[in-house]
Length: 347
Length: 129
Image 1 (cartoon, rainbow over the protein chains, first blue to last red):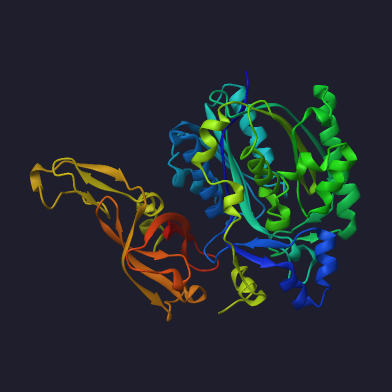
Image 2: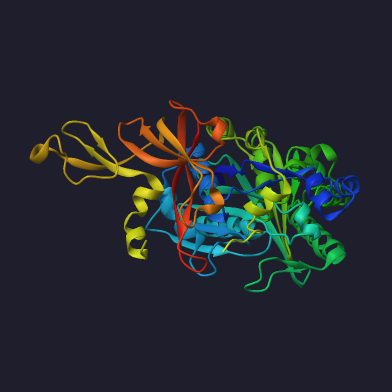
């Protein structure tokens, strides 16, 4: 049975902060930070936005774009590392807000930045096994980064939702391959507001080892090579890592250009790779092949090989494109940003 | 707001579910069980509003109620939905963007929370269309 993407939707809050603004507060050299990270600005949630509201907006965009009857959804899985509740599923609120209640299974996923792609895999399994008709997989975050920490320059807000099914496919997912190890490159303990990380350790033993292993594993499994693909998208903790890993694997800058959203968006954690894929679907045509590899600290990578069908033309314009979501931002200063991120507490 | 009180209104708050009288065609939000025009001849059915409408009038809240201090100043408007009924809702945009007659559409936002450890209330707000 062919399994794939029936529809997709993304959501990005309207607020942005420029990296210069953050650097000025901490006395860092903005030019070298921007040059090093290859990120210019990042999205910031509104005061009343969180991983749940972002998930709902992305999910509604996916449902409307594909003109999907939400009561067909047999599963909703929400991947995030910023679920507003420690106990009380994000996915139940999403189910109610999109009109999918009550005959479905739902759960929240957590795997640092790749919880959303793990949700896609779970939906693929259920659809492929014939247990459900269609499933909704979401990756969304209002990413956390401690004030003054390196993460603060990139931790952004946004998400994407994918409806996975076996008919009316806008893109076929040919296969997926995962690579998972116990690598403590980044973590957040229960009750702690901000994550900790291993600094440079997050690079080679974390991101690069897992992304290259999952990507190579999938290409070996399928007998494909980078030149077989029209587009590629990798997890985007900054602009440098995905460009370096693409080069290492043999993908060209042209292949990753469409999905590289991080310079004007920042790292949306669970939404990162999935928003990049949405940006590619916004412009891909029938027959285009897309290679996607997500990465989640802790650590693991999920790789996907995707082929676009002619149905993409029918649904594409029925929802906001990633490029549109990035337009008309409202820029804020650090003080307002700190207020939006809950870094300022009032009793 | 108690947990039960919020829970009962989830369909109305999340998805603007109101009612529609099939006898006279009038829409109601919040939902009514009986059509005040048709009385016993009225036949009511649930209706999901499209969430689009226009601002009838608005005010800007500078002195916010407890729990909303961080959001001040914010826009509170009476919005006439395209299907007919009017409701009060927050319009999320800059004060300078507000205008009587402006078109708005619904979005899903956090309405408030009981406390830091209490439940979070989600529901509908509006943004410029």
